[in-house]
Image (cartoon, rainbow, N blue to C red):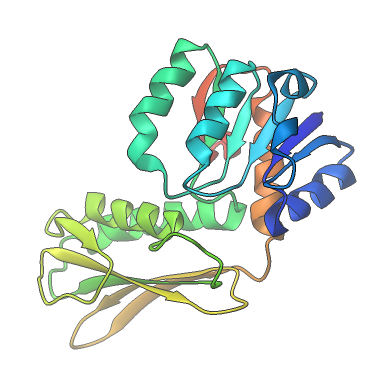
Length: 238
């Protein structure tokens, strides 16, 4: 594959390393230093784009890929208030996209475990549940997209929790997400069920960016030649 990297920070460089090792070619690297190269002409030379930027630029980046007819893997989080707009535009342009809050294979298996555990715990009302997430200080959104996905899975499995909040809460209807930003943590997510008798916890801890980068390359391999919007569950066949 010929890949366009939209965002060439630490994650972009990790993606490049894995992509090249798998025999792919990164022919376009875009960041804030070369916006003049972010053109339809350059994008059409590629087979797929992998977009890891910021909540403030992701929406326009996706639209540019749709306009160029370029399949795109989006790993930016914090922009989902525009989700319906992006879905409509992707469908209108007959374009293709993979979106996931987290591309790590391990995290996506963790999502499945979290969903199952929430359903198991629903009838045991003596247990309360909360989430903790830790990322590096350059992480711009809080809670993380991964934490929000985990929280929404818990809400779906435990209806007595009505909404998530990003602070400590005494309201039994609210699901707490506690966000910490500590260097150099790549990412830790914990779901804790607490009762007067005991605690049950599941934890995913990333050791580096390789899991996220490898999953993004896998998603790029998956989306080439397809139309529509996909997620990592579909990419992994879960």
